[in-house]
Image 1 (cartoon, one colour):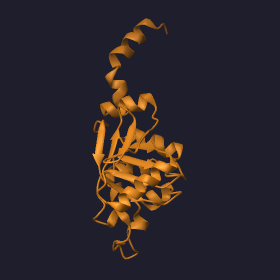
Image 2 (tube, rainbow, N blue to C red):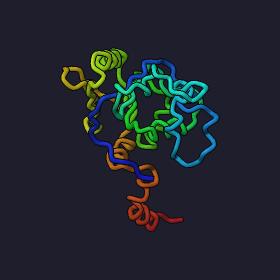
Image 3 (cartoon, rainbow, N blue to C red):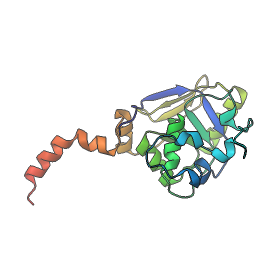
Image 4 (tube, rainbow, N blue to C red):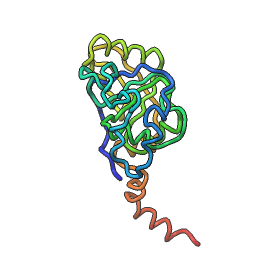
Length: 198
């Protein structure tokens, strides 16, 4: 399944300044029955977003109308816990295309890259600057440039580079998942197979 190409993302962000957010908090286990990657966004952070009577918790950032944008800014150690890929599906299905943190669990990071969500790991100091900027102005703009691998806070001198696997970077720039990538080079694979003895 192809995804939207990711080149430069410029928008406001939703802050979630909580450390050690695990995948069960991102998408509780009782919502993992579906096998298609749709509908999970409705239950993103379900137990944090809603009361037991299903009324929204107004104080939770995703329920606060002053926060908008397709970038989620989380605290340190985002996506820890079980390896469920549904957590990345929920983030994508909700509408986020980038998650920023000072540390990601490796499996969650890879699951995000597989579904078109860019995990941007920054220093603890830069993460604090982002949270401060959003606190001062909920519509502060972040600029995430995948080609140059930089993230910056618009209107400031604050900018930082981030790392990404070169294969995953090319896939995101082209809107490819792993199968799309293979299909795109199927002629090369065929030629290689012809030249390679069984």
